Amino acid sequence: MLRHTFLDGISRYWWLPLVTGLLCIALGVWTISSPTTALPVMAAAFAYCLIALGIFDGIWGLSTTKFNPSWGWDICLAVIDIVAGVWMLTLDPAQMTLAFLYIVGIWIIFAAFSGVGQMMAVSMYSAWTTFFGIILLLATLFFTFWLLLNPIGLGVMAWIWIGIALLCYGAFRVTISFRIRSLRNR
Image (cartoon, rainbow, N blue to C red; front, side):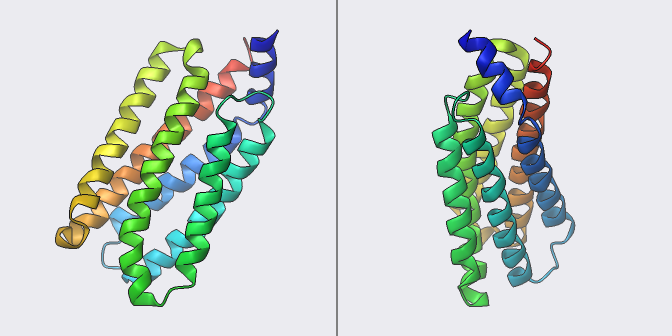
């Protein structure tokens, strides 16, 4: 009964991780393809994306409290997303640019750990999806830690590392959303 309730409840909201995944992929592609864009513009765009991701993660967490054992982590991630986005928008452009490098790294780490909880929630239904998701999350963490070790020294390379980390995390979110959607038919 609990398994059936979990599947019914979580599969209704499969599209929310898809939206956040597509937003991360779009931001990752934009970050990689536009390295000459002014840093303050990218930082401000990221702040707005964080706020949007936080809203969707919050809706996901609140919508699945009865069915998702990791809903608390989803709410925590949503609050962190929104607070970080609003805080970044209050900074002057020079401070926002520097904060961007650190905020994005810390945010991606929290998001990846939240993803582990989400992956474990659906792990009993597909070993392959779990394995693929964990690989994407490990890649996300690798690129993020590489960025945080020396963000200023990496210069332009920092944008590539950020873009790759966002692409990996976005791919994870898209993967888990389609896995959750497929659970509806079980």
